[in-house]
Image 1 (cartoon, rainbow, N blue to C red):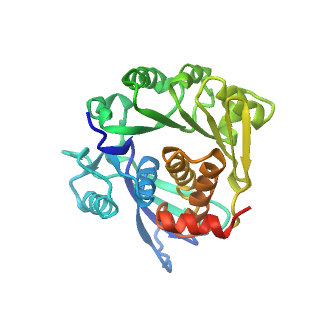
Image 2 (tube, rainbow, N blue to C red):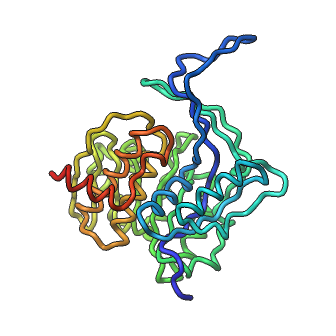
Amino acid sequence: MQKKWDVFVYGDVNIDLVVPGVERLPDPGTEVDVPVMETFVGGGAALFTLGIAKLGLTPVFQGSVGRDMYGVYIRNLFRALGVDDTLLSDHETKKTGISISFTTERDRCFLTYRGTNEGLSLKNMDLDMLPGARHVHVTGYEGLPNHAEYLDVLKKIRAMGDVTVSFDVGWDGSGVWYEGIFELLPMIDVLFMNETECLHYTRAADVEEGAKRLAESAGMAVIKLGKRGAMAVKDGEVWRMPGYRVTAVDTTGAGDSFNAGFVYGYLRGLPMEDCLRCGNGCGALSVTKLGGNTGFPTRAELENWIRDHRD
């Protein structure tokens, strides 16, 4: 099959209602006015996809929305930015998921209705369509609870031969940090983790040791270090790239934005240093505005940012 898309993404999409500056929720029976309340598209897989599209690549997104005004809103934004939504289905009974984010300078808390994201499973990925993509981005791994389906699907993807894979682990809420994840690594070209996830999964003494252990099996390990930037390990070689200093307004989607920037560089065949710069730049710019994708740069904006902030 001819390669129709640069990236295939399966996963979550929802609406984020962001209410900044909320120090505490109202007492029962009271009402509090807020200066602003914004509506954005959210969900880690969706934010990654929107970022890839803004950078000029062609993504297709498989997921589900409700037959409601929020589903229409999501489709309209996808189409406006160049995301192929032909694999985005309308759920017959469930509503589009909504997450209300109450944010302050110190912390965030959420009220979430999962809606059409409830019951997401990688086994529902349309594997027949995957040969139409150069690359697939996989999210939502939770360790032991869904390990078997990820192992099965990744084996099938690897058997296709001409589709590369990036994989961003999810947080293991059980606290087990299932070591079976190492079964998956040989089928992953680009493995993303944050520092905490790396240390938990590898039981390593420090993040570099952990990243090296992961990269022994995966094509490469890319570790997000927050304000300190990111590091990557491939074939035993280690790269570190400091982060860009910005004033953070909303950190929603920063990790997914980093992933999109890095994968953009990876698919363009850029050197590892430039892939890390692209990831750091997209992650930094994404936090400068409310919403997980509002501050995400276009390709020209990213290139200008990196040029103006060259090491």
